[in-house]
Length: 447
Image (cartoon, rainbow, N blue to C red):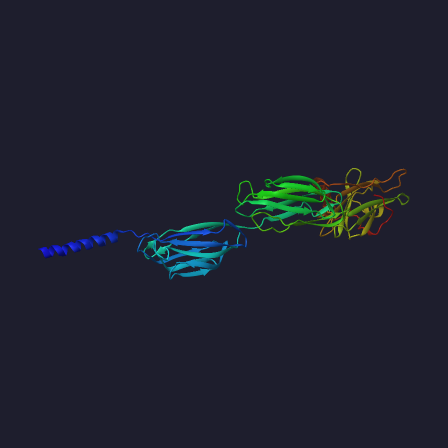
């Protein structure tokens, strides 16, 4: 019996020791990650560091430690820069991912340390908030947590500008709008640009501005400048654009190409310069008349100053005193060209009405059409308007023609005269279609 008792005691002690060891919990690996910056410029690089920790005490190693990290689309892995205490672990990389397998990490107090640290260089390749989540870190002794880190890749502000028209008549004004867009997930601060006008344009007024928080807009007859503006991030309910509207005046004939400076900010590289152009034109269509009362006639001369860069169509509509359209036609006039119509021989020689009036009202509409057709005149020539004048086809003592007066043509009037001309051309009688313009001037000129 005594010998039996001795055999049992060591067995009980062994059972207790084994039970205590078996019941001790083994902490799984824990992973954290961090970038070396809160934000980077598009194309810039920064360090991304992974740290896997073994929090167990002596003598618990963690073996077979592994994790996989897939980068978001806006980041690219360039290189593995350093690694500490990751044992026999294998690090594999692609431009879009990094993984660790087979690492052994020491315990708390272990001379080699109880963390595995890996540092890599990543590059920002797409604008926006880049949320990077690492998969669960695992080991032979158990699975740990996931890790997440965020960095903003900041792109340059996007700068555009636009005139309200392609052509600007000399002396007239047109709106010019500057628009700066922040495409990023963070605000841009210290936004600046300078815009110096070409010699043919002059600043007239600052008309509106919004979204340029805190920015100072300064102007002169030759420039517009913005300094120190803040522009909200994309998705902000208040908007992510800074918009400035001004009016400019055409002062010199010809193409005016307006190129701004680059747009700069604190957080991003400079954005591209904004470019916009406008052509300052004169009276591209010159309409004059000459009385020839001794021949019971008057003539109209049409010239194209050539400032619009192409052929102009002179659409002619002749009315009797009671506003009946009696004839219409259209004549193309090449750049710097000149053409004329005789009232008697061209406009009244084939009237729609049997009676030929002794006084008529002539309206001229200048257009830039693909085809020259008064029934379908196409777009109004840029910078040009409609002209109207009274004329007389028979001698009248002490009576002269009224000068042509230019005016913007209303949509209602345009619809009316083109509809009447369409009827004249489509009725099949041939009456009411005046003759084509003659080349050159038929007489002296008066505006």
